[in-house]
Amino acid sequence: MFTGIVEEVGQVKETTSGKLTIGCPIISQGISIGDSVAVNGACLTVTEIENKQLTVEITPETLRCTNLGQIVKKDRVNLERSLTLTGRLGGHIVQGHIETTGTLLSINQEGNATIMSVSAPKNIMAYVVPKGFIAVDGVSLTIIRPTSTTFTISVIPYSLENTVLRFRKLGDALNLETDIVARYVERLVKKD
Image 1 (spheres, rainbow, N blue to C red):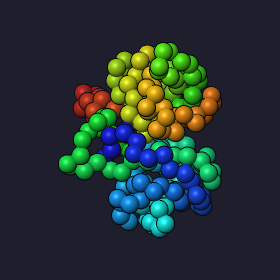
Image 2 (tube, rainbow, N blue to C red):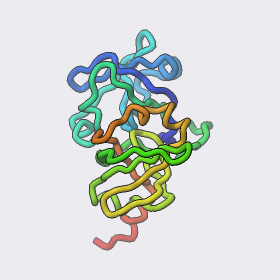
Image 3 (cartoon, one colour):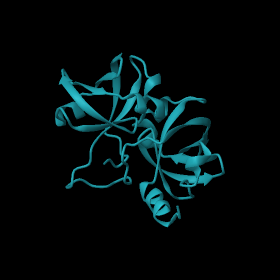
Image 4 (cartoon, one colour):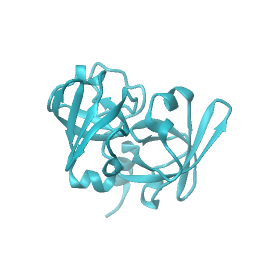
């Protein structure tokens, strides 16, 4: 489990079939082989640690559901170690189970905030509500305005500068994870 509070922006050093090696001097010092790490919000297992770099394995299902298959050498990725029971929950409950990707439609400034509009598949929009949570590339954000196929988020300067959101361009695929609590509630009340 994660919080959606990015700890470090790492740089991809190598991509091979089913693996990413990421330079990350901060979190590589506090992680062990077998630990979970969120890479752009996707929960992956650390298989190697060496020279302030870590390697994670990526399954075909993860490649289908995320933007990780589009990553190339030198790209930047959001990194977060899994939550400990003694840690603070500064964002929201994030599992690291990316549901789908959305497409970045617009980027505008409003005062000190960066407003981003994202299109998303209709099947997840039921969980996207005003002032609700969403994880975008692993960043815990608050939804401003949803429609049936899009939502808008307001990104504060700190989050923009300390995540890969600052590198995003129109048309980029963004990893999306909606609120797990909403999905469980729907399942419990849904009549099969």
